[in-house]
Image 1 (cartoon, rainbow, N blue to C red):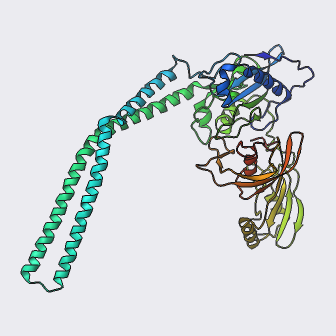
Image 2 (tube, helix red, strand yellow; image 1 turned 45 degrees about the vertical axis):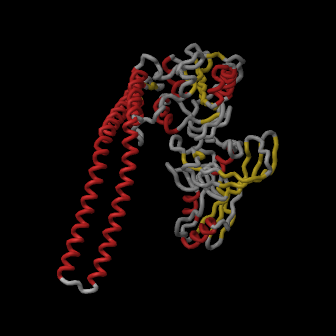
Image 3 (cartoon, rainbow, N blue to C red; image 1 turned 90 degrees about the vertical axis):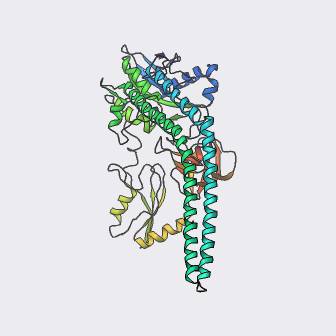
Amino acid sequence: MFHSFQTSIAGIELPRLFTYPFHYTPHPLCVMAAGEVQAFINKQTRWKEELDKGKMFGVLIVRTSNGQTGYLAAFSGNLCGSNSHSFFVPPVYDLLKPDGFFKIEEEQISAINHQIGQLQNCDRYLELQQKMERETASSQQALSEARKVLKAAKEKREQRRLHRPNENEQAAMIRESQYQKAEFKRLERYWKEQISEIKTEMESFSSQIEALKAERRNRSAALQQKLFQQFNFQNAKGETKNLCAIFEETVQKTPPAGAGECAAPKLLQYAYLSGLSPIAMAEFWWGASPEAEIRKHGYYYPACKSKCEPILGHMLQGLDVEPNAHENSKHLDHEPELVYEDEWMAAVNKPAGMLSVPGKGDAPSVWSWARAHFPEATGPLLVHRLDMDTSGVLLIAKDPETHRKLQQLFETRHIKKRYIALLDGTVTDDEGIVRLPLCPNPDDRPRQMVSTAYGKAAVTRFEVLSRSHGQTRVAFYPFTGRTHQLRVHAAHPEGLDTPIVGDNLY
């Protein structure tokens, strides 16, 4: 599994610190290793169809005990129905082993699914469902018509009472009312009995189905728990924890499905178990972008948050890891530039890398700067926000009424926004509109995803300003203000398909 570089790496300095996996620029050795892995997978014709659909790969630069530098390679999930392929490191636990407990229990659960399907599609059960629908409709119609008859008879009796009927006539009307009510009750009982007979027979089927579903649910949960316990991860200190123990320390408590099967944990696990020293790591996407995420062929991406962050938090202990460049931005010590001020408001130029409002920790923000610089100001201060990585003008209101009026101008689009971005690729259209609804990606926050089912409307007009050396400078005019809207509309295949240069997420 250890691969020596096919080309000379002489003169390339090794990194001082290991890669921070959630925000990084690939080290030159990682780029070289990724190139060799890509050349290898390009030759594997049997994988072409699956790889065309998209797959995440990873490389780990390592050093042997005798000082030789090389690399390991891995893929996320499985490839062509298998977890193990030569050239790539093995899985932390191979759940696809034919004689393993997972496959055996999975077959048992599949058998339960088959039983449930047989019962749900049984001729008698389907016949009973149809009969129940017919009888229910018939009973509703019959009872509705009977109620109309009762109502008409009652109204007729009320009219007769206006003419002062004698005692015999009044008694006759009372008997008529009692008889008609009794008849209606008998009709109700009849239909209730008819439906009850069908329901009783149906319940014999549904109780079996529910019992099988409960068994399936319990067995699936037990299987998942047992599986999580098989994924044991080591760190650089030699400490080992399984998935259950790792995620017990998180807010979610339970590991998500697929945890531990990504490329990064596989690479580190193999390195530790083989006595190899991890030097640097990178992950790249190969093939088409998946529907729920934005992935571009050949581009590097950080490790996922929901599955990998807790695991890598454990596995990287004992290594000297780069600081989080996103949180430790070079601009954190810079201040906003005041570009306009009057008695009601101010406008400042926020530097890239600075937060608009306070986040986790004590990193400075435009809000905290404004609070210090305008001590007499009241109210929320910031009228709108910009992403941490985005530079640009922010408006500050000095009192609640000004804040309300400025926000109203944003909402009615009397204040217009213009963003300038450099895109990694050539946009062929000179101008246009991107309409892609957005919502948070529940499996990989803070990333957003395009979703027609759950997304909120997001609309951006773009205008190409220049094209040069495979890059495009554009002006964006957002009509809506969704999280990461411009970044996603730029990067998504159905948008401009050209991500913003330096955008670590997309």
